[in-house]
Image (tube, rainbow, N blue to C red; front, side):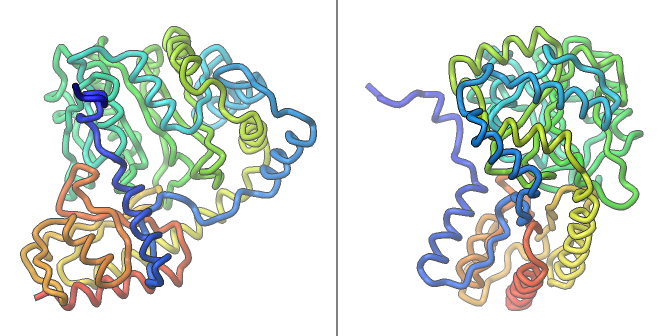
Length: 400
């Protein structure tokens, strides 16, 4: 008899975490390693938010809370959705979890039955398919390649919909590509979804405030109000507010779905950290003045990385609209041999050779469902990015 659950055979560990762990091991062994794998801002959490967390501890707000969030945070979330997205929700339509990942996982556990399909545009965040599989569903991938700006078309979406489709999972700006859908591009997708009343929309808006230049963020229920009653709009404080370790994600949607998510959470983690919740209240209600200068710095970093990577032989690196990732193609490197004698058969081999031979840690494209590519997180210092990109250029110049 096999001791472990058969469900585990359907999923794999997170490749992004694996890359970060491998880089840390090499660094601990004395190697000069630059990690570009983690999707984590290098900024410190703003002082007013840290102060709110300390104040919560001092005030003794360290007990259990309501399973899916304190009333004050739910009110702040409702105010945020109205202020930023022109979406009206009541606190009974809001759930708060330990990061956006838990919110997504809870939604799938609460709604998926065996054979239900979830349409996922590729490239996708590495955890999406595995969460669907853990929930008993089947991921259905729709590829938007580099020639499409890493975005899918309305025709592609419609072709993927079947009688088994339960969810359309949407993410803009995207992890891993940084690609963002304009209002018109998203309206084309929502026009399709309006025609399929049994398909629900789960939108991951975690990178909402990381939008650059002329690109303007928008979210499905905002673009098409007719989808409001079957859309779960997920967001969080991790990225824009540099609060990855605080672990607070949230979502708003139909009360029936929120109740189901609350039931799942009540029998798993129960409430998120009370301290983190009070810090998140300050994040959403307090000053937002740091967002613009942080974005300006990310734009500088993006342009630095794109400019340098496009100098590397065999690499093409598009300029993304948001988030803090680039997703260059390495099609011109496939089949070549590295200076250490490694044949670059695919993007996983490329990433492994790059780490071992140059000390630069990136995540290979197959982990995100589209190859041959790799993902760079530019949420680190300009000096580290310049050094890492120059190492990548040298590595590619050495391929024969």
